[in-house]
Image 1 (tube, rainbow, N blue to C red):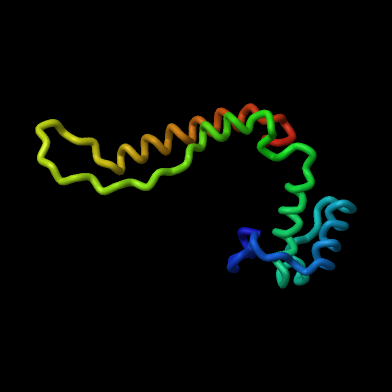
Image 2: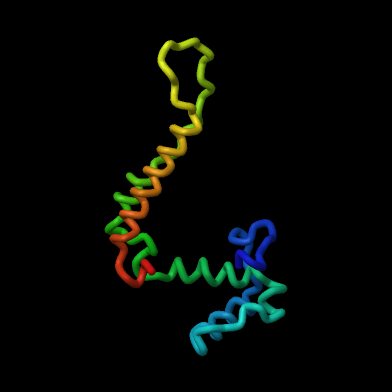
Length: 124
């Protein structure tokens, strides 16, 4: 999808229903359909629609109910940054970009720790 789906609304718009069903049958039959076939390249939305359907139909969400709170804590909402006042200080100030980078790296470490707790079928 990412390779051939450079179109607006790739995950927002639905594909043609008959193409989605054909693709579903191919996945259920052979398990590995050729996504480079013209029918799927011309209607790339059917591929993204089937992927969304797959995630919706999972018995347990991809990120699992059991780990939801840990994910919520490790991915706090981003707060817009206010411009810093221009004040002469005696002590050196760490540039805002460096602070943002450190916070982002810490956030990614937390997310990776929670991802490692996912059941094996959810984490490869």
